[in-house]
Image (cartoon, rainbow, N blue to C red; front, side, top):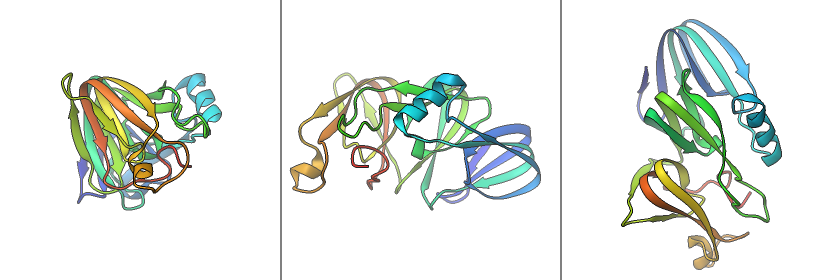
Length: 210
């Protein structure tokens, strides 16, 4: 159902089914479509409450019908992720669209920059289907194994999936080491077995320096 046209436009072919997408990301459609705004960014009361507490707003819309919709957002690169009953953790600002059958919610990921109080919750996508995530520049998928844990700059982190443990290390970030950047210094460490998506450019909206 999901396919890329170039690297920055997502095309979704629908035959009566639905897709959930970032509000305002649709750039064109053909056929007959119905649109409904969804609020909270997650399913149920908990999703709405946690979004409000963290100040992390994620407004989705549901598109349903027959035809093709095209989605894009700020010329970001788009990456397709196939889920086979597993769970994807993704920053809300990096989630473009999901199959209508996938469940979205929120997950507590620990203190990520306590002085700012940002990023305490991460958006989750779970089930069987496809999700489209965005990155500032072409995303790189890095494998984490028991022998090779991975440490990531929070500004470059996009998403992760698999059996991974996530922790936050305070002290030195890559930018503060070079005398750049500001705010509280921390890194994200992943251990276990899974995949981590990182982007080659940093956005302040992702973590830490908002």
